[in-house]
Amino acid sequence: MPQACAAKVSESRPVDAGDHAAVQALRRVAEGLALAAPRPAPPDPARLAAVLEALPIGVYLVDRDGFVTYANAAATGLIGRPVAGARWCITDRLFASDGTAIAPGEGPMAQALRGAGAPLEPVETIMEREDGGRVALRQHPTPLFDAAGTLVGGFNLLEDISASKQIEARLALSNRRDGLTGLPNRLALGQDLSAHIQAAEQDGQRFGLLRLDIEGFKSLNDAFGPGCGDAVLVEVARRLKAGLPGAAIWRSGGDEFVVVARLDQERNGATGLAERVVSLFRTPFCHGGRAVPIAISGGLARFPEDAADETRLAAGANQALHLAKTTERGSIRMFDPRKQALAEEQRALRQQLRLAIDTGQIGMVYQPLFAKDGSIAGFEALARWRHPVKGEIAPADFIAEAEAAGLIASLDNHILRSACREAASWRNRLSISVNISPLEFLTGDLTERVEAVLLETGLDPERLELEITESIMVSDAEKALAALGRLRALGIGIALDDFGTGYSSLSYLHRFPLTTLKIDRSFVARLGETLESVAITRAVIQLGHALGIRVVAEGVETPEQLDFLIQEGCDLTQGYLLGRPGQAQDYAGAMGRPG
Image 1: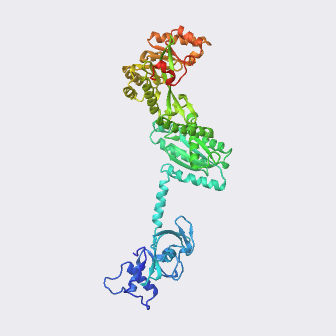
Image 2: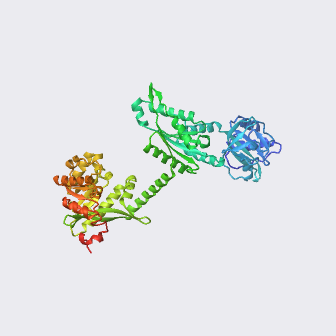
Image 3: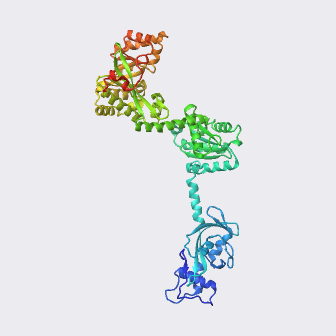
């Protein structure tokens, strides 16, 4: 087979003027193919022609002006017409692999002749035949030179790659198609959505992007037998295709579907599209003789009103779907740009929070706890985020974000270490109280981490108190009981915060090794207003004392509240009336803090 590079005529074999030009060209091709007889005598031109005619690969030769001087049977069959004597024989109906037409005189053979011998890589093209059919070709154009290096013409090999291209197309289609429902899959969605946006931009059209989830899908096989889940997926695909003619539909994975539909074709625009989709699933379908209900939740975002690029459009639909699944399952909710802005703000806040933990922006303030005689008995450590732009941010505004972002372990460790290191430096052996996130409390290794911090900072465990909430006990009472027992074995105190606002089960006080009860500030604030608050506060103090548990009242802001609590025997009080949260140096005297 000729190599895809320039071929030179051997100097030992000059061109015989009596031979036909085509035969001479065939001889040169035959030499390139290494088909010559092993003896030094020139091969028989007729034999060379017979070999070329028998080749399954198309071969044609041209002179320096581009006129075809020879084409074998395979080339003539591929081209679909006699080509001897034609110029640029196939370039007038040639297309690039992307479908764009190649102008006459700009095809691979023409480029090879103009390239003055520069090697030309094989080129894949599509040729339109005389009969209207199309053939995919791989061309190997090569220029030919005489002994003096003068261009005398060229030859081209034509491979029919139509079958392999069809196989590639089928494979590509199968890779883009969901085998169960027959719908385009997630791969196709990623490729198609940008095309829908481009088409809509050109036509000035509006469309809705709808993301759908099947509610309770994972339990369908358990409830209705094996195969029910697949049957539901097929039925959902069928109903969407039948009920939304003209819409593009994908199965994007699992029980998730995506729909793109033009809104100007729907009654009431986006609302009409949502109502139509909901109506498709109001009736169950029959599987195995049983009626299987189908509940669909969805989120809808509009192009271009809600977003003008595929990333934001998909994010908007996802945000709306999340809203549907968290507020009203089985409904379709619209994208809300205000909620999207809030979500983006939350994401930014979480990224900034990660940086804040690493760079020391999370600092501590300390609020004193006062004994009945008015002396300071200890401090509660409170975290503050000193944001470089927003200023000081209270824990209520970032603790939940830390939990949602998976940063709560790092944050709790930072707060605990900072508070213990500070308290260990005080000459006065006052207690330090630190809040622990419920998520962190039940992770299983809290005791080991607390013990490591105590060893690192040198703080006496008897001076440390960890504040927990009742949610810890409700979520996993046995695990909480085991963790509290390990902490108490170290000598660490345990305070139950916000007592009276949650479940407040007396069994907690009986079973759990608590050392402190903290009366919630909401009861303290109403002491002078309602008899109920007075009764509850008095009862909690008496109950704590009966169980040998110290009682702390939070949120003391008036002298009347303080007088009542002291009269009732409350052990410790805390609030703005007595002392606001401040820097450690603000309470250096009480702490016995070094210079």
